Figure (cartoon, one colour):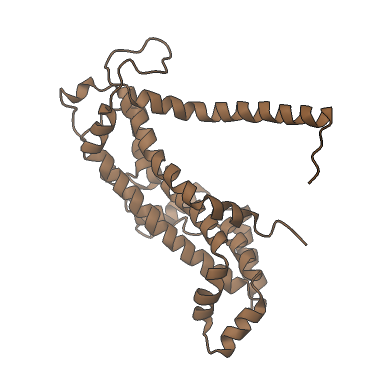
Length: 291
């Protein structure tokens, strides 16, 4: 590739660097602020906007992790994330595999129905009535099943299956493979990058589940982590042990408890993303280049 060294190109690059650096700074500052303030160990009232803690301490983190409320909410979030993601991947890949077959009767009608749900949906109240009618209110099932499959992820997964050469399927059929074996042993391994990308989208969705938790879960002991963090923003008094904070815990700044809860809730996704970054980018750009 020949590099353009003209003054207009350099000016364009300079403007890009300035703009992107500014955006990166604006994006990163709230998170850095949360990290710094989460190490505040003093109970002294803040004067104005303070960035650095007066006294560095890990007390906010130890208070959260040693209590009963935060670990329980963390466990619930892990459960609904794992089960929800597995269910979503199974449903999405199986439906996408079936509807990627041109010989399937009613394929256009079914695809059109899914497209309709992508453009229009019933709204919050009809969805709530369905969840209530199925008896899933105040249960973890209400956080897993209603959003088990997304139309957007279905379409990109179906496109990936449609790109698999038909000769591979024919060879597998000649060797005696059935429909499920072809789906599991031939198609799924060939769309691993897209599978990782879609899986990461589902993981992030399930982990950040917030509104569904408020809408469907009425028992505080069943709140997922994001709902608990929302409560932490409102009041930090329920984060320690689920009871009134003890005298030793009162030395912890409420703001530090709030910030620590935000950091702990975001940490699993930050740790997970680097492992899937390559597959995620590869999966999302798959099919973008036309030859």
